Image (cartoon, rainbow, N blue to C red; front, top):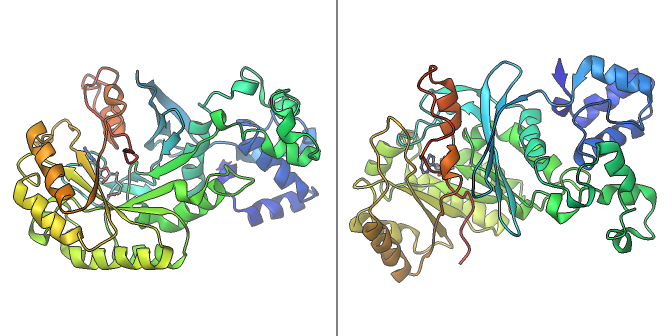
Length: 405
Ligand code: SAH
């Protein structure tokens, strides 16, 4: 059965037409999904019963099932989703006072093979569809408490939109359609940021990702600002240029991890085909086209790329650029021989870069008790029984946003 979210708007209109339904039904369904948090067609009570039945016979609202839902004591939520073909993917919700960040996957597994990363260990399976990418966003958003309408079913939620005394000043005078559109716009219930830093290489699945982000940033979708979306890439220069040419306001993060090609070839195997210079050129082009500063990510691996000479070389490489640097102390991955840097070398590394005028952030750990680093949960779920150590793992994860100073 097809997932509704995988249909393009045109496909869905054509389907409705074949059912003898007016085009406005598409908007109604969309509103139920994005504002009403509906997870089944039955819940879409203002649609004719026959249409609800026809939809239910042909489509699923969501294609995946939640295989696991882990909650960290710091508020981080992680979902392991089982897709229709039984593949598993992960997505994470990071909660802070003023930010609700979804960290999403774009592929099952990953083909890039970065030596320290859990996602690539079992290789690449397939790209996610646009619907599968969107579904992660909706499922994570639906975990957010909607304080005004907590405990209500989706029908009641939509009906009370604009009826709530607290919401009235904002929606007074609006027509019912506009009022309904503001349902789900309660800041406490909204996703504010997206980081495409889960499993997979986003730029290797760019078309499906862009289609999903179009919906995420649409007013009648999830309504996020494009500037609050960060796409993290291993560095695929041609795709970076393509993204730049679209002139979207998405934020680009480039996983550099080494200041020279010899070392980067060891850590990021795709580098021997691209090389650092071509990646930096493409990043400069992205900045020129979009006026959005590129962030460079650098995973610190003890003894391998965390030495003073690496910091100096990295500073020389990035000094002339309007670049931000995001340092990520390595998160342990079972079976891999790497370690986080010593605190003293981390401090020294940061100081050397700052002395050269670079803007440096060190990422905080989040969800450390729930395997929230990319690919880790799926890996432990795929492990043979007996090797599963899901809930009590001590492995860490990143707060996948830049730390604000
Ligand atoms: N393929 C994309 C997205 C990967 S996940 C990319 O390469 O950018 C986002 C970031 O987390 C990347 O910089 C990635 O290298 C880093 N990462 C992956 N596994 C990690 C680990 N075990 N510890 C620290 N950072 C990790």
